[in-house]
Amino acid sequence: MREFLVAFSRARSAPDVPLDDLPSSGGRFDLVCRVVAAAFLVSNGIRRDVRLTLVLEGPPKPPLAVRLRGDALRNLHPDERSIAAWLLRAMAKPSVPGAWLSAGDGIELSRALPSDVLAERPDAPLVVLAEDGVPLEKAELPAGAWFVLGDDRGVPPSLASALSTRRALRLSVGPVSLHTDQCVAILHNALDRAGATR
Image 1 (cartoon, one colour):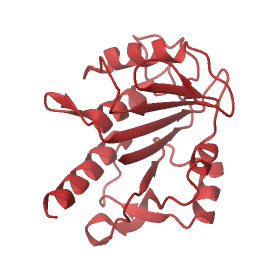
Image 2 (image 1 turned 180 degrees about the vertical axis):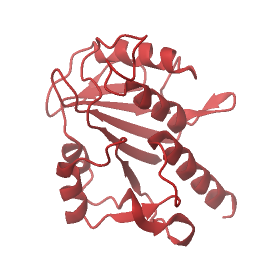
Image 3 (image 1 turned 90 degrees about the vertical axis):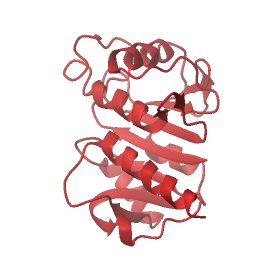
Image 4 (image 1 turned 45 degrees about the vertical axis):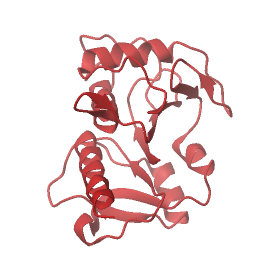
């Protein structure tokens, strides 16, 4: 299972995002949608071995954690508007702190901070993407790693503290600053290539 945790500092935590204004009114909800596409979609299919947790920390009632499991996802289409509508329908379902509630096929909701999510697997090796990290081509990725990313503002301070405590591997995917969804695609490619050589 490939596991990703992505923290979005201002993506709206309510299902009231206008589909015609995902970047501005949605607090960069367009980026949320692109990360979902990069995490799961391949040509003519869905990656079934992926679990993605999105933590939305924008208004009006943060945080909202949305967990997507590739082995159970249905009706995921590749365009941002369709992904946004699909996510927003799920986000309208009930969510509470301290528990994951089903919001449809392969989607669960919780009122959890990124650090709360990481605490669910205290022994999992963590890899955080950072521009000043070890270059991907020189790194040895730990088995069962949990990949942690931030949005265009980076990893939030509360999560950075938890990552430091857990001694997360800091990893760089290249010398140019990239969008979060591009980083997810590069990680998948590296893992695909590593799996193909075993």
